[in-house]
Image 1 (tube, helix red, strand yellow):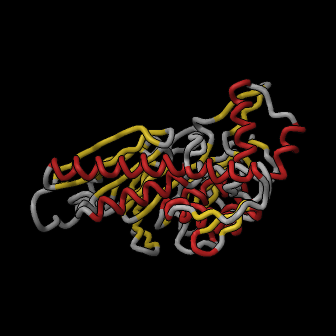
Image 2 (tube, one colour; image 1 turned 30 degrees about the vertical axis):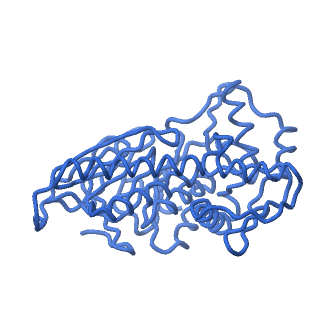
Image 3 (cartoon, helix red, strand yellow; image 1 turned 90 degrees about the vertical axis):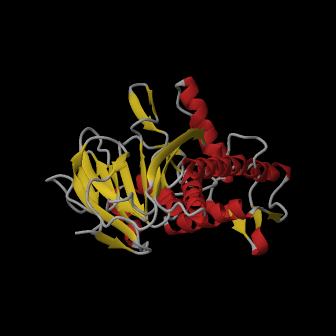
Length: 350
């Protein structure tokens, strides 16, 4: 039986397979669509530090190719605005403005940056700072730590702390932003890819290509299903073994964890995910999956739940209408009541 979530998000359990965000057109039968026959086209390009992949069904190759080109151009545009690696990006320039003194004068930002900041602040408030766009000063210290394979000094983390805290990012009227502390740096790494996926799927739908799936790193957004199928088949990864496959349509799925991005220092594993409240990297292995209508929110929630852990993290998701989550830790698998499927015989609630 399909799980029904708001805004036509549709999820169906589909058996057990191996893999992380592996996908293929589902074999389950569905009524054939009216109109011309549709063919599957697939495109990929590197953006935002990962590979963006577009799978779309279209009647003509030229239509699919033009739409994919426009979609990747849109992702590149967003990267130029939202990257914290690019010195000339709008996000970076906003943070640098606090070097001249704080509070800063109100700065009018673009619609894209505004939507990311607005959504990020909403998740920051709901999670009481477990997700925080102002985490940039800590991120810079841990990037250096990974390069040097040495933990950040406690004194460096303490010196960075006054510039971190979502309450120091003030959103005003007419898309204006103020930074309330000096030397602030913003980092949208936990939300920008999700926003980009939403924008790409909307762009494709605007061109009449609604049967599409877009993937960026550990995030995806599924549109209408492939012809003759109930959904897009997606395999959820586990910490050390198989996990359940889902069929998704009209949904976003975000996965957050340290399966690939981590560093080992003095024999201890540290995740790339940081706790904004302490500046420390997570050291307990956690794998989080969040389902919901929009990727911008699943992306941010996945990061927040990773920081909070199973009990507080799943409570955060329960308070977010239309979203469901699963958390895997060494002690077992935990999920909200609406997250589909029994993932193991040891499933329980925290």
